[in-house]
Image 1: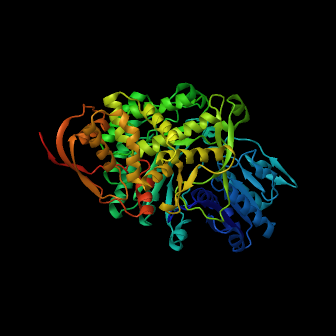
Image 2: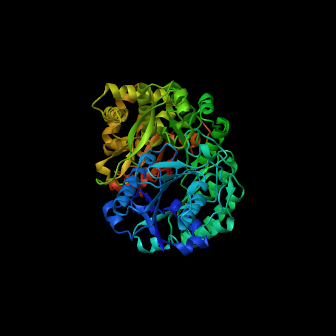
Image 3: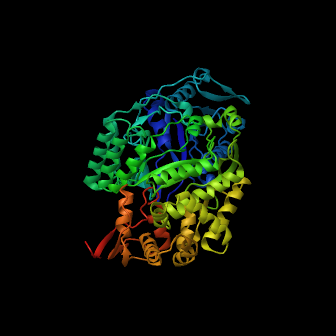
Length: 637
C-alpha cells in the first residue's frame, strides 16, 4: 500500500488550533474511490508547525505528501517539502491551495512534483489514480507536473464545484480529537462559491455560482461537532445568510448548543445583500450567547474606489438603520475597511471613517492593510501597473498567537503606495486608523468624541486629528510615545522589515495588531493616561462641572484590569444621553443630579487574562465597554 500524508499546518491560538479542513476534504473525497482505497493508505495529517527534522524523520516511507498552502504556512511547507525530498527522494510532493499559482516560486524548485491550480478535490483524486497506474499526467487539467527538469502545464479548464464528502463524518478527525490535548476549532462549509469578484480577494478569479451542500450532511456535521465538544465553529461560506435555509442551519446549531453547550461560539462572513436575514441570525445567536459579531463591511466608502475593486456596498442609509437595530438589541456588529485600495487617498479614507462613525459604528471598525494575495485580480501585473501599486514585503504574523523562536518566517505583500496614495500618506492613514480603533472603538475617548460631535458639532475625524497633532507636540505623554512607536513600526514596514503586529510583554506572549497594542499601552498606565489627556481636552469645555462629570464617566465605563466598577454621583445624565445615541435616538444632554452604579466585577485583574478576554475576545463587538449600568438614585425620575 502506498502511504499518503497531508500537510496543513496552522497557527495555535492559545490552547486552540483549527482542524486541517482543506487537507481533510481532499482525502475524504479521494478515498471514496475504490481504486484509491485499494492502492493507498492514509497515514495522517501534519497540522502544527512542529520541528521539521523530527516530524519528517517520524514519517513511514511516504509515497506521496500533499500540501495545502496559504499565506500563513507557505514558507513552512516549502521547507518541509525540501527536507522530505532530501530523506525520501522518491516521495511525490503535491502543492495546492490559495497560495499556489502559475507564477509561484515553487515552479523553480527541485522538490515539488505536482502543483494544483484552483479547486482541488477532483484533480487530487485524478493524480492519485494516475500515479497508481503510472500513466501520463497530460490528461489532468489545471496542474503543472515535473517532466525531467522542467514543469509542464496542462490545459486550463473550468471545473465545477465537486460533490462534498465530509472529513468529519468519514472519521478523519476522530483520532486528532482523541489524542490531542489542544482544543480544536472546526470549519463548517454549507456551500461553496462566490457570486462576487472583489479584486483584493483570492476568490475573485474563481467567481462562480454558489453550490449549496446537502443540508442533512451539514446538520450531521453539527451533530459531530456537538458530540465532540467543539467550542468554536467558523463558517467558511463566502456569504452566509444569503439563503433562507441558513436560518434553519442556525436553528439546528442552537438546538445542539442547548443540549450540551457545544458549539459554544459561531462566526461567519455574512452576506451584505440580505440584511434582514443576517440580523435575525445574529439575534438568535446573540440570545443564546453564541454570537461572535455580525459583519457590516464596506472596504471603502467611495464609489470610484469600489468601481476599481469591482465591489458594491449597501447604502449608508440602510447601514445607519442596521447599526441602531444592532445596538438596540445588544448585538455586536463590526465593519471592515481596507487601507491602500486603488483610488483611495488619505482624505477619502478619513472621510469614509467619518461616515461610519456618524452612522453609529462606534464599537468596532476593523482596519486591514490591503494585501496582494497570489490568486487575486489585484496581483495581476496589468492591474498593478494601471494603479501604480507598490508593495512592501513584511513578516507575516497572525494575530493572537504565541510566536516561537524557531518558527519559519512567513511573508505578506502589503500595498504601501498607489497612484493616489503616497507612502507618506500611507503611514499617516495607518496611524489615523490606529487612533480611531484604540481611542474610539476600544473606548478610551469614545464618550468624549460622541459628546463633542452631538453637542458641539465637532467632527469625529477632526477631534482625532487634533489628538494626533497634540501627541506629536507632546512626545513624553503616553499618546506621544504611542505615536512615535507607530511611526517607527510603519517605517520598518516600508523598509521591508518588521511586521504589522507587536508583542506587549506585560500582557503575555501573544501577538497583537497595532491598534490593540496601542490600546494596551495606554491601559497599562490607565490613571496617568486620563490625567495627561485632560490637558488636550480642556480647550473643548467651558463648563467645568460638566467636564468633570464627563471625564469621570468616560474613565469608569471602559473595562480595565484595575477596577471592578464604581458608583458615580453626577449632575449630568450621561448614561441616558449615550444610551439614546447608540440607538440612533439623540436627545440633548439633561442636567439632573443622580447616582449610577457601574458594575465591572467580571473584568479580570490579571493583565494577560484581561487582554485575552476583553481585548481579543471582544474585538468584534465592543465588549470592552461596560454595559451593566443602573440608576441608584435619580432626582426627578
